[in-house]
Image (cartoon, rainbow, N blue to C red; front, top):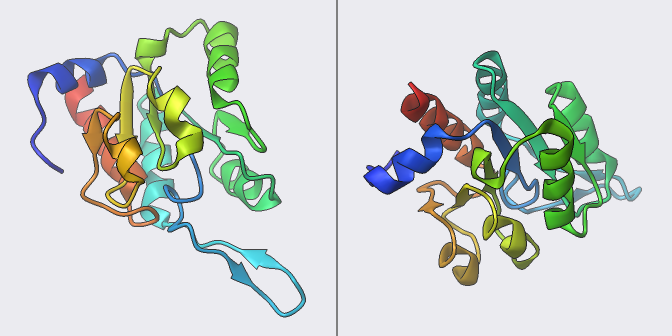
Length: 167
């Protein structure tokens, strides 16, 4: 974990929810296909444990992905996430829904994203993060760029940051 500024640590202290994209963040963005057409994705178990430790500390966790496959839904259900939004083309609308239904403000939400469909939500939340291998235009707008690539523990790194700076 990199050293962060006081301004960023102040943002992190307010976080009550960590949301993330799936492809390119929880996975490396690659997809595996079998000869019969089945699709598979690889998730990092350390990221999964990150969701458990956050939830144990009272932080809500969720996924907001434009992917329509059931794989992300299955992963979210297995981790018992608080929010699972699959096929979310308008992520800002989902953010508004989460905030209004749970009485959260934007500054209490963190989001991890890597691609252009994450731009609006990354520009809105209180703390925004991208993996090391996110698109250059995404890295220009986020508060923090992880040293880790997508699928290699970015979520866990952010989970540990939240726990560290909320104390």
